[in-house]
Length: 460
Image 1 (cartoon, helix red, strand yellow):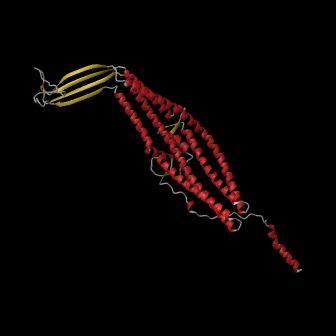
Image 2 (image 1 turned 180 degrees about the vertical axis):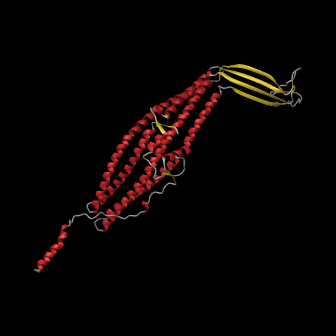
Image 3 (image 1 turned 45 degrees about the vertical axis):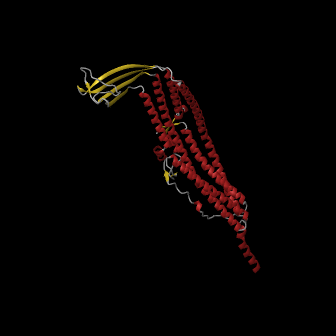
């Protein structure tokens, strides 16, 4: 009876143990890792918090913008010089003269003596004389062609300024996107290092429990070092991107973006500063090349007009000081029409015409090259938007599959059904997929900015 009772008690105590599944997996392993390289990247000495702040720095400190503005001022100065050849030219000359050998004799500025006749005013000694002259061009085809050339060059300079503003806007947008992408890549690299360290801790634990080998430990540690290399390279790229942003806004230092910077609204912000064009032929660089061709054509015509005669009007008024009666008298007042006819100057005009013809041909080829480049640039920018959207979609799917693969591989390794090689490969694939997805998302923002700004007019 006692043996039956003992057997009954033994069956009761063994029932719960038999009810448990001997193949049930243990709970997931939670590794506790701490590494100095997991600390966030140090912030830049200066940060920009918005698109308007960054654009304000560009307007204030950009050397390219100042150079383009100086080019406009230079072209306007050339136009004013060309206009002066067609406007009246007045000049006043004053002088004091004295004959050192004959102190009592009045002499003019040329040294010729002035002797008063009977009834005429007596000149003073020393003699103060003056000449007022006025000239006016009446017929000068070359001067008019030069003015037209200078006017077209001024228009070209203003168009180049607008193109500089567009390029600075596009360059700033690209640099900001690159800065945000570098910040995000630095964060992803730290997450990748954290996961690599967790895999190393898991492998070390398996080795200590006897289910792993030394090869597994070494292999996973090698993956940790690869993750460290990626982090170091990413941080250096982050610093270089910050330096590029600093140069873009005119500061010789690292400039970063604040955490509150909104990248998604960058396209809308740029649309407030720039307006879309109806046709690529209206883009500023095409307009600058077109007006430059007009300027060179007028310049060639100016050189050709050097063979034509010119007609001008000249008037001169002279006077000198007198003692009786005082104080002065007007000696002469003349007016003359001057016809100037070029005859021979040694082939100067012919060489000038040939030189400016070559410059005109260069400007024509430059215009055609600009048109071709703009057409290809616009087509490529529009196509890149669709390509970037497709890449983002495929990268998101790839990242999702890589994350699921890494999760399953890690779980299989925990229960002893996977190898360390599979663990390392899945971790590396996940790091690459996450980094690729982040870069593709930033490339999509950049593609949309390029598509808008390649066909935009920016007038700050």
